[in-house]
Image 1 (cartoon, rainbow, N blue to C red):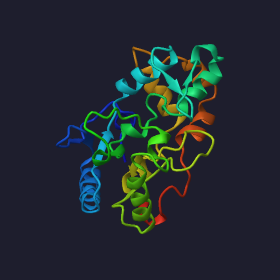
Image 2 (cartoon, rainbow, N blue to C red):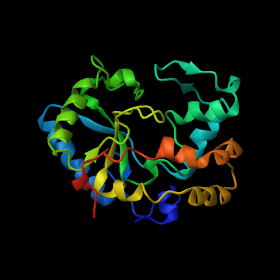
Image 3 (cartoon, rainbow, N blue to C red):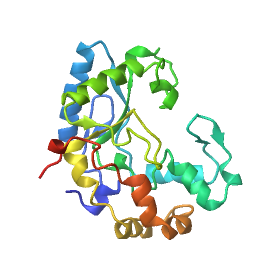
Image 4 (cartoon, rainbow, N blue to C red):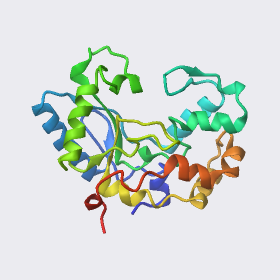
Length: 237
């Protein structure tokens, strides 16, 4: 289990740094290296776009989106005029693709966003968008290969926590999570833990009053994942 600071991205002491500069927990890093080797043998350049993300980094993303400094997009990639929305709807628009500070799975060292580096030129501007992983998109073939590996139990413990749309977070086929550890950590986050995390933050979280007014529902809708996001045998007893 993780401490509160580790769970919320405020303590990264357990992580190791990979050759590409990304950071993961050691067990997840070893498993991902094996998945990369399998992908390479199948002709794919499985690469990490994003891995560990600190609380401070997540708060910066959140506050910039909440203030309109950073664009927010809808499911089709179109920009959303968030400052024209009522605060509650602004929160919902942001949380479709971005987590509240302290609640991101990227805080744990088990989760990462991936792409196929061999499918695009070196100067390709990666978007991590639904269009990139859709049929005909540059990363469609990689994800169909991953689908087959997951179905066969050959993905070295990696599965998609946001593989289907449950009305909260948009489907993110590019987001992989190391289930043997992440399945444990997911149950640790609570309203009280998150509020204590925000209390200790001198910078502050924009729209905090709106978040706290509906925090139990937000955790259920946007943070909790389906009970069958990974096979039962991946969940430690």
